[in-house]
Image (cartoon, rainbow, N blue to C red):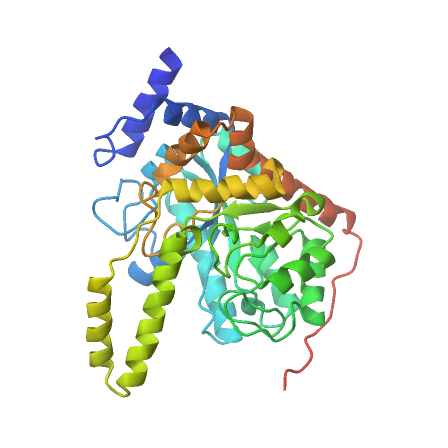
Length: 418
């Protein structure tokens, strides 16, 4: 009882004045106590991009050592990371798919530099990690392990040499595509070109295995998922995806793939993006896109009329709200189909404009875990979801790389596309 009270007091102190209005529930205190022993590993956070877009790429331009909930649009700061029990964070070094590959490669290296400067700016809170053992050690030391995940295979510019240099710079996963199909892999949200992976795309996966880089299948088409699972000698991950059977969005993972996770050994890190976790929000977004297309066809060359018409439609059709319960439904579904050993968390904080009610920042993980406890999840289950599953996957990927240590680098090149 004394320990629970101390944990509750710690939660309030770390959260700061804006969050200290509501005392944590007993289940939230239990959840936070679990996270003191088991590092919560979040698979995807876009803070580096938010710093690039709003703060001149300068971690010193905003005081991340203070609670920023009431003063900025950021979902992430150090007090809220502490309150949320986040023990390890994959910082996404996202750059847009609209960039040329050469531009994307440059911008991605700049984003990696941002992560290193972020860690250097707050050395008492963050430390760079590249292995599972690093995460465990850094968490035990009371810091937040900081890892790097690349979002978009276009950043390697069809060069396995660049791939190797990204790994050398600290990147430990690559999301094979983003919103657009690349020169070697089909995206979930673009027209297919390869029916999955091209032959060069298969070589990219093999070289990632040799290096010890996780193959991230968020954003890719179902065919690309299946090809990558077939080709990869190491388990795959989904750094920020949810379940398509619950919300019918192309970005979510179908049951046909979830059912392969026990054999593959991989992990699906459920995301919080409202359109991916709420069918009502997804349908609203589809209807809004349809209305926008209709208005554009009726008002060619008149963007002001389109904007006014879309505002009128939105005023008449308010955006639905996703909830913690919606996210928990996805976690439950992944567990049901893939198994308790193959589910994790990838919030996508600072990568979206809105979040489910009750999940507005990185401090809210205990509330989500408390919701799962109400549904019957045990402490052992919560430990697996929070971090143990991801640690196991990382160690498996590292073991494959160790077994391939004597293999020569792959020197394949992409075939001309025209």
